[in-house]
Amino acid sequence: MKTEIIEELAKITEEEQAFLSGSTEIEKDRYVTGPKLIMDSGKLLERGKLITIRPHTRFVHFPAHSHNYVEMIYMCQGTTRHIVDGDEIRLQQGELLILNQNAVQEIFPAGEGDIAVNFIILPEFFDQTLEMMGEEENQLREFIIGCLRSKKTPLGYLHFEVADILPIQNLLENLVWTLLNRQPNKRSMNQITMGLLFLQLLNYTDRVRVGEQHFEQEVLLGVYRYIEEHYREGSLSELSDELHYDLCNLSRMIRRLTGKNYTELLQNKRLSQAAFLLENTRLPVADIGERVGYENLSYFHRIFKERFGVSPKKYRKGEGL
Image 1 (cartoon, rainbow, N blue to C red):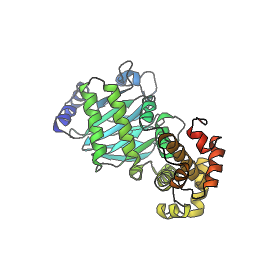
Image 2 (cartoon, one colour; image 1 turned 45 degrees about the vertical axis):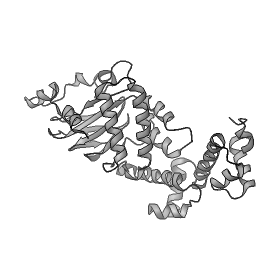
Image 3 (spheres, rainbow, N blue to C red; image 1 turned 60 degrees about the vertical axis):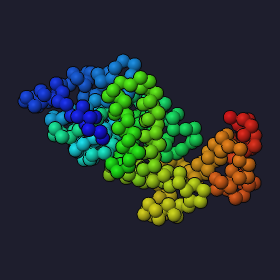
Image 4 (cartoon, rainbow, N blue to C red; image 1 turned 135 degrees about the vertical axis):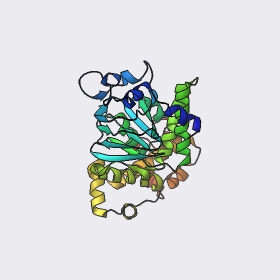
């Protein structure tokens, strides 16, 4: 990250000066409305804003708390120590921690050289981000974004170990710079940048950690990632080998967590990709069927009609839209 950004974020705030002068507890009125320790977006976001940033407050212990917003913590320099839903996380330079509204977080005091940025984001901000990520159905994308938009997800956090991924670092730096400098057309730029950021993060879901309590959810991320990359020719046995997970147990786990078996997930991806190609290309129907993994054209026509209610040809004409 550029030196001038680090220097700006490293400035001692009035709040931090109080801790250096001997204060030992956070001022709850800065963060909380009401008796419960729930960090309130109304205290941290300007009226009408969907996203903002603030330097992570150092030198003090933040007791266990939750949020009524999505929080992203980007570690610009140094390290910070967190307990999230019972899991200890040491956030290293260049890593990203995303907390949804279910997460219970405790933060240990950071030193002067430990520079992090907190993004305060209302869940509806991700509605626009999702649109920026394209119209094609993507189970992996829906899983990740669902973790942020819904309170029903079992996952409280996503820890991305992406310090060495240059495009992700550049996009995060762009977000920080834009929000710090109050650029014109800031909302549009932020929405586009966030969409690009999540497109990049989707390429590195093998770098995401969700905690020991949710090991199966982490495996499910691997399932979705595999299907996105191998939907044309992928097999459950190959997936089992790649994940080092027993074949029968993996099959049962997929059914239990998604309500579908592996073949159904694979078919959903193939057919959604076929629909996308029908809408956005002039490729012949036969070529599209083969491209998404169906050598038998009659079978492709039959299952496509079962899914969308019309044949691929009629779907292309808009009769199934």
